[in-house]
Image 1: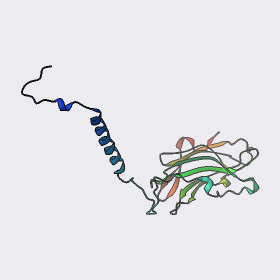
Image 2: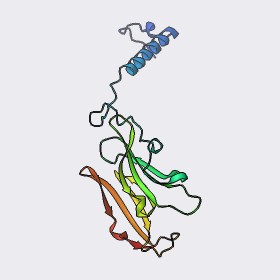
Image 3: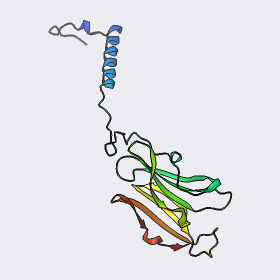
Image 4: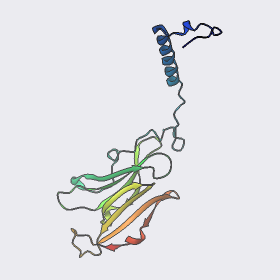
Length: 191
């Protein structure tokens, strides 16, 4: 390559280690400054409580006493699922719980646990009472709703080992409470 006589001498533009060191130091300063100058994280509060709902984990079922009358047998949480059920941006926990049993399947209850304004877990709804003598399968929280299949008995003569009724249900938050709906194709199907 031939240099033109009209162009200035560019010999001073050859890079040396000191140039690379200066460039690397400047880039490190820019990256560090960008890390320090981040905007505040968005925070969603529950009813002005000052508790960041998005940051709080779903309530733990072990932190509340479930309203089951089990005597010395104790209670057990069989299934749990979490999600935003009331649209406030915070997660609630839905659980299927029953009395512990050495054999057989005692009736289950379905409970929804949310955080109080002080941040403590508490039961806010009972969707299925154990006194209804139902078993719960296919339990999930999806799209802001609790879904389950309930197994029951058509009469006292049906052996407790073998439920003969099945119903697919969904509970959705509406008007300040959970509203139950039954899937049309499963309304009290015989098993």
